[in-house]
Amino acid sequence: MATDVNTLSKLLQALAERRWDDAVSLGADLAKREESQGHFQAARRLRGALGDVSGQAAETPWRVTNGASSALRALFPMSPVDLDQVVLPRQLREQLDELALEWRLHEQLEQAGMSRRRKLLFVGPPGCGKTLTARALGNVTSLPVMVVRFDAIVGAYLGQTAAQLREVFAYTEAVPSVLVLDEIDALAQRRGNPREVGELDRVVISLMQEFEHASPRGFVVASSNLPRLLDEALWRRFDLVLTFPSPGRRELMTFARHRLHAWSIRPPRNLLAMLKTAKSYADVDRVLGDMRRRTILRQHME
Image 1 (cartoon, one colour):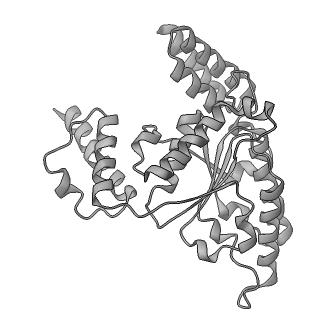
Image 2 (image 1 turned 45 degrees about the vertical axis):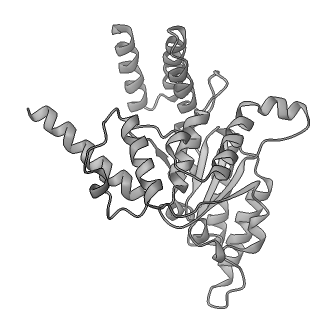
Image 3 (image 1 turned 135 degrees about the horizontal axis):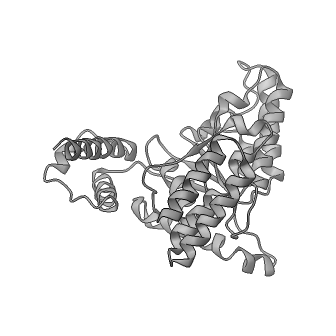
Protein backbone atom coordinates (compact mmCIF):
# COMPACT_ATOMS: atom_id res chain seq x y z
CA MET A 1 0.00 0.00 0.00
CA ALA A 2 2.93 2.33 0.73
CA THR A 3 4.09 2.00 -2.85
CA ASP A 4 0.60 2.98 -4.09
CA VAL A 5 0.57 6.04 -1.86
CA ASN A 6 4.03 6.97 -3.14
CA THR A 7 2.89 6.60 -6.76
CA LEU A 8 -0.27 8.61 -6.11
CA SER A 9 1.81 11.35 -4.50
CA LYS A 10 4.09 11.48 -7.55
CA LEU A 11 1.05 11.50 -9.85
CA LEU A 12 -0.57 14.44 -8.06
CA GLN A 13 2.72 16.32 -8.11
CA ALA A 14 3.12 15.70 -11.84
CA LEU A 15 -0.41 17.00 -12.46
CA ALA A 16 0.20 20.06 -10.30
CA GLU A 17 3.37 20.82 -12.25
CA ARG A 18 1.71 20.08 -15.60
CA ARG A 19 4.17 17.31 -16.45
CA TRP A 20 1.61 15.47 -18.54
CA ASP A 21 3.89 12.73 -19.89
CA ASP A 22 4.98 11.79 -16.37
CA ALA A 23 1.35 11.82 -15.20
CA VAL A 24 0.30 9.47 -18.00
CA SER A 25 3.20 7.12 -17.23
CA LEU A 26 2.39 7.03 -13.52
CA GLY A 27 -1.31 6.48 -14.23
CA ALA A 28 -0.45 3.58 -16.54
CA ASP A 29 1.72 2.08 -13.78
CA LEU A 30 -1.19 2.27 -11.34
CA ALA A 31 -3.50 0.56 -13.85
CA LYS A 32 -0.94 -2.21 -14.43
CA ARG A 33 -0.56 -2.75 -10.68
CA GLU A 34 -4.33 -3.01 -10.20
CA GLU A 35 -4.52 -5.51 -13.04
CA SER A 36 -1.73 -7.65 -11.55
CA GLN A 37 -3.75 -7.84 -8.31
CA GLY A 38 -6.83 -9.05 -10.16
CA HIS A 39 -8.66 -5.71 -9.99
CA PHE A 40 -9.55 -5.72 -13.67
CA GLN A 41 -12.47 -3.27 -13.49
CA ALA A 42 -10.34 -0.76 -11.59
CA ALA A 43 -7.58 -1.15 -14.18
CA ARG A 44 -10.04 -0.53 -17.02
CA ARG A 45 -11.38 2.58 -15.32
CA LEU A 46 -7.89 3.96 -14.79
CA ARG A 47 -7.01 3.38 -18.42
CA GLY A 48 -10.30 4.92 -19.46
CA ALA A 49 -9.42 8.04 -17.48
CA LEU A 50 -6.14 8.10 -19.37
CA GLY A 51 -8.15 8.15 -22.59
CA ASP A 52 -6.78 4.80 -23.73
CA VAL A 53 -8.95 1.69 -23.66
CA SER A 54 -6.30 -0.46 -25.33
CA GLY A 55 -3.96 -0.30 -22.36
CA GLN A 56 -1.21 1.75 -24.02
CA ALA A 57 -0.30 5.36 -23.21
CA ALA A 58 -2.25 7.75 -25.42
CA GLU A 59 -3.38 11.33 -25.75
CA THR A 60 -5.47 12.26 -22.69
CA PRO A 61 -8.04 15.03 -22.07
CA TRP A 62 -5.68 17.20 -20.04
CA ARG A 63 -3.03 17.07 -22.76
CA VAL A 64 -5.20 18.77 -25.38
CA THR A 65 -3.30 21.91 -26.33
CA ASN A 66 -5.70 23.43 -28.82
CA GLY A 67 -8.67 25.66 -28.06
CA ALA A 68 -10.88 22.68 -27.23
CA SER A 69 -9.31 22.43 -23.76
CA SER A 70 -11.13 25.56 -22.56
CA ALA A 71 -14.43 24.35 -23.99
CA LEU A 72 -14.48 20.97 -22.25
CA ARG A 73 -15.41 20.10 -18.69
CA ALA A 74 -14.88 16.65 -17.26
CA LEU A 75 -17.70 14.92 -15.40
CA PHE A 76 -16.25 13.12 -12.41
CA PRO A 77 -19.24 11.83 -10.39
CA MET A 78 -18.51 10.78 -6.81
CA SER A 79 -20.06 7.39 -7.59
CA PRO A 80 -20.07 5.96 -11.12
CA VAL A 81 -23.43 5.32 -12.74
CA ASP A 82 -24.04 1.89 -14.20
CA LEU A 83 -26.51 1.28 -17.01
CA ASP A 84 -28.44 -1.05 -14.69
CA GLN A 85 -29.09 1.91 -12.38
CA VAL A 86 -30.75 3.97 -15.11
CA VAL A 87 -34.44 3.08 -15.19
CA LEU A 88 -35.48 3.06 -18.85
CA PRO A 89 -38.08 1.34 -21.04
CA ARG A 90 -36.97 -2.09 -22.23
CA GLN A 91 -36.50 -1.10 -25.88
CA LEU A 92 -34.35 1.87 -24.92
CA ARG A 93 -32.28 -0.27 -22.55
CA GLU A 94 -31.73 -2.88 -25.26
CA GLN A 95 -30.48 -0.21 -27.68
CA LEU A 96 -28.00 1.07 -25.09
CA ASP A 97 -26.81 -2.45 -24.26
CA GLU A 98 -26.28 -2.97 -27.98
CA LEU A 99 -24.14 0.18 -28.16
CA ALA A 100 -21.98 -1.11 -25.32
CA LEU A 101 -21.65 -4.46 -27.11
CA GLU A 102 -20.66 -2.70 -30.34
CA TRP A 103 -17.92 -0.91 -28.41
CA ARG A 104 -16.54 -4.17 -27.02
CA LEU A 105 -16.70 -5.94 -30.41
CA HIS A 106 -15.72 -3.03 -32.65
CA GLU A 107 -12.77 -4.95 -34.10
CA GLN A 108 -15.02 -7.79 -35.21
CA LEU A 109 -17.40 -5.30 -36.79
CA GLU A 110 -14.56 -3.61 -38.66
CA GLN A 111 -13.27 -6.95 -39.92
CA ALA A 112 -16.73 -7.59 -41.34
CA GLY A 113 -16.75 -4.19 -43.06
CA MET A 114 -19.15 -2.64 -40.56
CA SER A 115 -18.65 0.26 -38.17
CA ARG A 116 -20.05 0.80 -34.71
CA ARG A 117 -22.43 3.68 -34.03
CA ARG A 118 -20.63 6.71 -32.59
CA LYS A 119 -22.83 9.81 -33.01
CA LEU A 120 -25.94 9.75 -30.84
CA LEU A 121 -28.86 12.10 -30.22
CA PHE A 122 -30.80 11.87 -26.95
CA VAL A 123 -34.13 13.70 -26.93
CA GLY A 124 -36.64 14.08 -24.12
CA PRO A 125 -37.90 16.43 -21.39
CA PRO A 126 -35.57 17.81 -18.69
CA GLY A 127 -34.54 15.35 -15.99
CA CYS A 128 -35.51 12.20 -17.90
CA GLY A 129 -32.04 10.64 -17.68
CA LYS A 130 -30.23 11.82 -20.82
CA THR A 131 -27.05 13.08 -19.12
CA LEU A 132 -27.26 10.25 -16.58
CA THR A 133 -27.28 7.76 -19.45
CA ALA A 134 -24.26 9.45 -21.04
CA ARG A 135 -22.43 9.05 -17.73
CA ALA A 136 -23.45 5.39 -17.60
CA LEU A 137 -22.24 4.89 -21.16
CA GLY A 138 -18.87 6.30 -20.11
CA ASN A 139 -18.80 3.94 -17.14
CA VAL A 140 -19.65 0.78 -19.08
CA THR A 141 -17.05 1.60 -21.76
CA SER A 142 -14.44 2.93 -19.27
CA LEU A 143 -14.30 6.23 -21.15
CA PRO A 144 -14.03 9.70 -19.57
CA VAL A 145 -17.16 11.82 -19.97
CA MET A 146 -16.57 15.38 -21.16
CA VAL A 147 -19.21 18.10 -21.47
CA VAL A 148 -18.89 20.88 -24.06
CA ARG A 149 -19.22 24.41 -22.68
CA PHE A 150 -21.08 26.32 -25.38
CA ASP A 151 -20.16 29.65 -23.81
CA ALA A 152 -16.53 28.86 -24.60
CA ILE A 153 -17.33 27.84 -28.19
CA VAL A 154 -19.53 30.66 -29.42
CA GLY A 155 -17.33 33.61 -30.35
CA ALA A 156 -18.08 37.10 -31.47
CA TYR A 157 -17.41 36.11 -35.07
CA LEU A 158 -18.46 33.13 -37.17
CA GLY A 159 -14.86 32.18 -37.87
CA GLN A 160 -14.12 31.88 -34.15
CA THR A 161 -17.12 29.64 -33.50
CA ALA A 162 -16.39 27.41 -36.51
CA ALA A 163 -12.75 27.07 -35.42
CA GLN A 164 -13.77 26.11 -31.88
CA LEU A 165 -16.18 23.51 -33.24
CA ARG A 166 -13.42 22.03 -35.41
CA GLU A 167 -11.13 21.77 -32.39
CA VAL A 168 -13.78 20.07 -30.26
CA PHE A 169 -14.49 17.47 -32.92
CA ALA A 170 -10.76 17.03 -33.53
CA TYR A 171 -10.54 16.22 -29.82
CA THR A 172 -13.06 13.40 -30.23
CA GLU A 173 -10.91 11.91 -33.00
CA ALA A 174 -7.75 12.11 -30.87
CA VAL A 175 -9.06 11.08 -27.43
CA PRO A 176 -11.40 8.15 -26.73
CA SER A 177 -14.18 9.71 -24.66
CA VAL A 178 -17.91 10.30 -24.35
CA LEU A 179 -18.36 13.89 -25.49
CA VAL A 180 -21.68 15.42 -24.40
CA LEU A 181 -23.20 18.38 -26.25
CA ASP A 182 -25.99 19.19 -23.84
CA GLU A 183 -28.94 21.21 -25.18
CA ILE A 184 -27.65 21.06 -28.74
CA ASP A 185 -30.68 23.12 -29.84
CA ALA A 186 -28.79 26.18 -28.54
CA LEU A 187 -26.45 25.82 -31.54
CA ALA A 188 -28.49 23.89 -34.08
CA GLN A 189 -31.84 25.64 -34.33
CA ARG A 190 -33.80 25.43 -37.55
CA ARG A 191 -32.36 27.74 -40.22
CA GLY A 192 -34.31 30.46 -41.98
CA ASN A 193 -35.79 32.14 -38.93
CA PRO A 194 -36.29 35.79 -39.97
CA ARG A 195 -35.81 36.88 -36.34
CA GLU A 196 -32.24 35.54 -36.28
CA VAL A 197 -29.17 36.92 -38.02
CA GLY A 198 -27.65 35.02 -40.92
CA GLU A 199 -24.50 34.32 -38.93
CA LEU A 200 -26.39 31.80 -36.81
CA ASP A 201 -27.44 29.86 -39.90
CA ARG A 202 -23.79 29.52 -40.85
CA VAL A 203 -22.96 28.24 -37.36
CA VAL A 204 -25.59 25.52 -37.86
CA ILE A 205 -24.00 24.62 -41.20
CA SER A 206 -20.56 24.41 -39.57
CA LEU A 207 -21.92 22.16 -36.84
CA MET A 208 -23.59 19.84 -39.35
CA GLN A 209 -20.39 19.60 -41.40
CA GLU A 210 -18.44 18.59 -38.31
CA PHE A 211 -20.99 15.91 -37.48
CA GLU A 212 -20.97 14.70 -41.07
CA HIS A 213 -17.22 14.14 -41.26
CA ALA A 214 -16.31 13.32 -37.65
CA SER A 215 -15.14 9.82 -36.74
CA PRO A 216 -14.96 9.86 -32.93
CA ARG A 217 -12.75 7.34 -31.16
CA GLY A 218 -15.43 7.15 -28.48
CA PHE A 219 -18.93 8.63 -28.67
CA VAL A 220 -20.46 12.04 -29.31
CA VAL A 221 -23.77 12.41 -27.47
CA ALA A 222 -25.95 15.40 -28.29
CA SER A 223 -29.04 15.99 -26.17
CA SER A 224 -32.07 18.19 -26.63
CA ASN A 225 -35.11 19.09 -24.56
CA LEU A 226 -36.65 20.84 -27.58
CA PRO A 227 -36.12 18.57 -30.60
CA ARG A 228 -38.76 20.45 -32.62
CA LEU A 229 -36.34 23.40 -32.79
CA LEU A 230 -33.52 21.37 -34.32
CA ASP A 231 -32.69 21.88 -37.96
CA GLU A 232 -34.16 19.04 -40.01
CA ALA A 233 -30.89 18.38 -41.83
CA LEU A 234 -29.08 17.71 -38.54
CA TRP A 235 -31.07 14.59 -37.71
CA ARG A 236 -29.55 12.45 -40.45
CA ARG A 237 -26.04 13.21 -39.15
CA PHE A 238 -26.64 10.92 -36.17
CA ASP A 239 -26.12 7.16 -36.18
CA LEU A 240 -28.84 6.66 -33.59
CA VAL A 241 -31.64 8.79 -32.10
CA LEU A 242 -33.00 7.74 -28.71
CA THR A 243 -36.18 9.23 -27.22
CA PHE A 244 -36.38 9.34 -23.42
CA PRO A 245 -39.84 9.48 -21.79
CA SER A 246 -40.60 11.35 -18.56
CA PRO A 247 -40.20 9.02 -15.57
CA GLY A 248 -43.25 8.16 -13.51
CA ARG A 249 -43.46 7.60 -9.76
CA ARG A 250 -42.63 3.92 -10.16
CA GLU A 251 -39.50 4.61 -12.22
CA LEU A 252 -38.31 7.27 -9.77
CA MET A 253 -38.67 4.90 -6.81
CA THR A 254 -36.84 2.12 -8.65
CA PHE A 255 -34.03 4.50 -9.56
CA ALA A 256 -33.80 5.66 -5.93
CA ARG A 257 -33.47 2.09 -4.68
CA HIS A 258 -30.77 1.36 -7.28
CA ARG A 259 -28.77 4.42 -6.18
CA LEU A 260 -29.07 3.54 -2.49
CA HIS A 261 -28.02 -0.05 -3.21
CA ALA A 262 -24.94 1.21 -5.08
CA TRP A 263 -24.04 3.22 -1.96
CA SER A 264 -24.71 0.20 0.30
CA ILE A 265 -27.48 2.15 2.07
CA ARG A 266 -30.74 0.53 3.16
CA PRO A 267 -33.76 2.48 1.82
CA PRO A 268 -35.34 4.49 4.66
CA ARG A 269 -38.93 3.79 5.61
CA ASN A 270 -39.97 7.29 4.59
CA LEU A 271 -38.39 7.06 1.12
CA LEU A 272 -41.74 7.57 -0.62
CA ALA A 273 -42.43 10.69 1.44
CA MET A 274 -38.89 12.00 0.78
CA LEU A 275 -39.47 11.77 -2.95
CA LYS A 276 -43.07 13.02 -3.08
CA THR A 277 -42.06 16.27 -4.83
CA ALA A 278 -39.47 14.65 -7.15
CA LYS A 279 -40.40 14.84 -10.81
CA SER A 280 -37.12 13.75 -12.45
CA TYR A 281 -34.06 11.57 -11.90
CA ALA A 282 -32.12 14.74 -11.20
CA ASP A 283 -34.54 15.54 -8.37
CA VAL A 284 -34.07 12.06 -6.90
CA ASP A 285 -30.29 12.34 -7.13
CA ARG A 286 -30.42 15.67 -5.31
CA VAL A 287 -32.64 14.38 -2.48
CA LEU A 288 -30.61 11.20 -1.98
CA GLY A 289 -27.34 13.13 -2.20
CA ASP A 290 -28.50 15.45 0.57
CA MET A 291 -29.50 12.47 2.72
CA ARG A 292 -26.16 10.72 2.17
CA ARG A 293 -24.24 13.90 2.92
CA ARG A 294 -26.07 14.42 6.21
CA THR A 295 -25.50 10.77 7.17
CA ILE A 296 -21.74 11.06 6.61
CA LEU A 297 -21.55 14.27 8.61
CA ARG A 298 -23.48 12.76 11.53
CA GLN A 299 -21.17 9.74 11.60
CA HIS A 300 -18.11 11.95 11.93
CA MET A 301 -19.72 14.14 14.57
CA GLU A 302 -20.52 11.25 16.89
